[in-house]
Length: 107
Length: 113
Image (cartoon, rainbow over all chains, first blue to last red; front, side, top):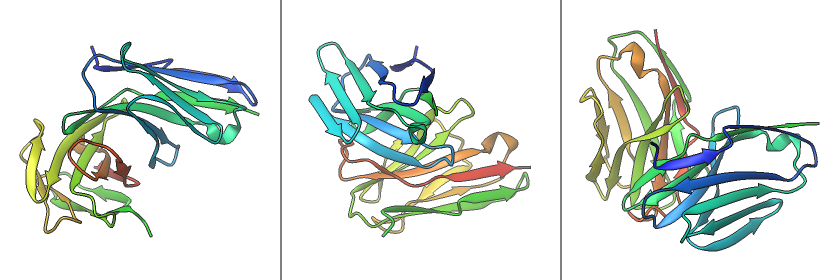
């Protein structure tokens, strides 16, 4: 069993829909990261969280340390949001990755 | 202005060859990493360097060797390339060992034929 589990694996939405991607982890962490990987392959760091909630534009990330769970929300989704979203956790001097959620937003 | 730069972006080579992928960061970060993204899109850590010291060395074949001439560079050398080495390799850096503030390179797609 992977230490970082994401759901769903694949997600298709219509433009404008509110989207939620979930991440659960089973290890002690110092931080949790949400990453975005576009079809071209480059990885961009969206958020780094150790508690609470962060917002950047239409993206919101929350984390519940007690429940070992994080969510990434996208409001008013747009086709350009189509990408793979990866949850990752920092464990000591290592980083563990989820398998990613492939999001497709249709116009 | 690129924070973490990898070269080359694409690399096609024959089995048995030796190749290198270069990585440079201009962020002043203390730790640099190499990750391999497998066919299922999982990112697996291969190596990390902190101030020229290897601090993580996962069970990768010893055909892979990291080389860090200075704090801003971590190059990946691969000897005797095999078909199974085909993957996307990502370089990353972070300010310190705790893993905050990760910044990734754009990846190098290695194809072994």
